[in-house]
Image (tube, rainbow, N blue to C red; front, side, top):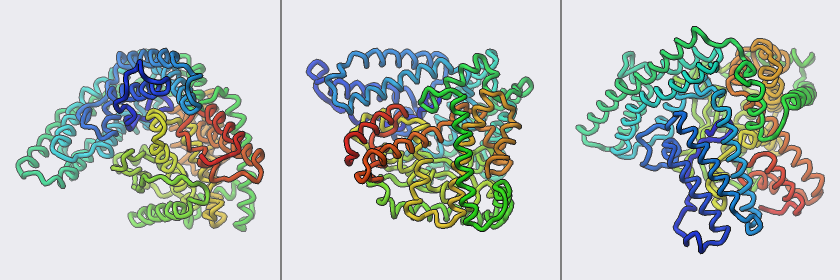
Length: 599
């Protein structure tokens, strides 16, 4: 992920195949080569992107997190933007001109992120090496042969210098007056300590990483002596590299707790107000002010609560909306048992809802991706700090499916009435559908297929939650209430995110606002506010993106009249891959003006 809104690049462009020399090329061909070269250059500098590609190169290394590398990346962005300016836009077709606009936006975004790099929390409960390292090794690092296994071992050894570099960066930030908020320390420390439980560090069983390594090499059919050596090497690498690296991070975090910050909003950081304004723009991709975002949130909350009251009547419940909130929060019938069987039943029910919408996807769009998806519980080492659910993209070549992770640590956080909307948001027709389609748009340059914007991807997922209404898949009032409760929470984020970071609300005041205005439980609201505090602006992108897409749909329905086809509209929303919202508006407005034809 590049700063605030860019997802980690996961695949290189096949478009860099051999072609005639630069001098003999058309402007279009020269531009295509430029985009491919830029994308490959970025991937070559990031071992994690190379691992996502399935490339052997980089599988034994971690990224360079030093200040010099950040400065080099910014210089590279400036150079690329200067070269982009040399292309004759008049000689390009509309699709390539759009790619130029996206590339220019991305470059400017990189430079803005560089400007504010010192204010961003690189280690907190929502991100950091305590997540990146195990997720890379377990989810993305395949072991297909001995060389892959040896690269895995090399990465285990490399954890110590990698984390030493991250700690050095934390020291620089602390010297400038930037430290993570107080509540994040025990959560991060807990994640780190979970990775150091089990062999080779002591305790019962294997540690999560050693268990992953052993499981992956078990099916290689290696000679016994080679197998034994690899296991021994992995154990030694964990004792000498992995373990000491994480203990270094743990020690720094514990020492920092003595002088930790108790201010929750980023207004307390150096140039905090300006930083938050930049964060809002980077996350929403629009030049919105905190006041605008806050007011929109209040208006959306009122609208959604009115819709909830209508749904509440259909359930037969009599009373005020806050009473209904308490009813669904406290009645055991709305929750699966917090047992192994209850958790398995919940995951099976999610798979069933996703299968149901997949079977009828043709009713709302014609684009159906080839990429597959699986539903899994969040790993035990991450449960206590992870959110409710999250989607991780699959490999572009289909070798690794997309994964919908669900945090089943506490089933009270997973009400039955929200199961459908959560399945549709994270899976199909939400994140998995959008991501898989984007990866398969081979006519686009690679940087567009494999990039992303929070406002676009989360906006689509929230918009997509509503598509199954037309299929009849919200088949009782409580499921409809669940969808509205999820939407209400996203609208509430506009209020509390700006409340904490701009209006200087305390964490407790923000939690209290959610308690009074949403259907979420108190513990869930505490976790939510802690997330918004360490990722300023990010939570505002969901509703902002959805509102833009709903605005465009309304415009299409009004302009096209009987020619409007929701399948074509949804295809068009996804047909250009991820876009900043202003560019999405331009492309969709042009599509509508052109008669809403198939894309």
